[in-house]
Image (cartoon, rainbow, N blue to C red; front, side, top):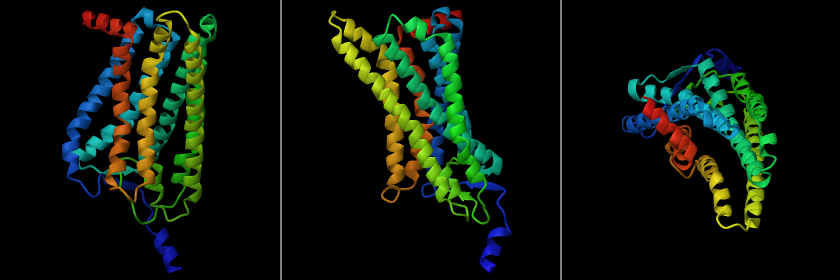
Length: 313
């Protein structure tokens, strides 16, 4: 009974985020590149959004989906990175109970929304190449609106139980999170309750959402490749594949970074614990910084739109 009393007398009202518990001296060195990457991500995505908004030739479903991806990237960045930089610069490690679980919800839901957006974009490319005559009738502004509602609703509802389950746990002793951000596993393991169901739900929900998106993306590109190989006109196959190039690069990068992050988390006992923490931060920062740049460099219409925007300034 004494042990039970110890668990219930001091409930936790806030957490302390300890970035890089073994190498806290890294913080000062990392703050500069992280700040520059944050400015790059915000600036590049804002430029892309403004360009698509102002350039009439970009008012097409494909670019609206790209706008959705940019918005998701910006929200993810602003939810995670500013708090990390505040810890690095001012050593303000505390985060309230509610803020921690709100951050957890945003990270889980918006990561899944990005994956789902990539899946919708893959379907857009599939229709454009495999059914070009039907493209204007299938991929419409109404389709984009419905896809956006689906992306937000599916992933918000599926991700909502993660922070709710964690918030319902009892936190009655330890309140130090050995991470820069409020990930579910880092927070829930501080609880004095059984967290088996909490972890099981995140595992099943995460792999169901991301796994189903990945399967549909692979199927879309399989059909695209099959259709392209049938094209006999000289140069037509290359032109068809080039329209998918930017999208495929972003999916490959997103999946690779996520896969490395998963592998490092599974092999935590074999690598320093600070490595997964760093990779988690970079995963919320590097893809948002690169996504608009890749599209801006590889897509002629966007490049021309940005040039027009710069000439107006």
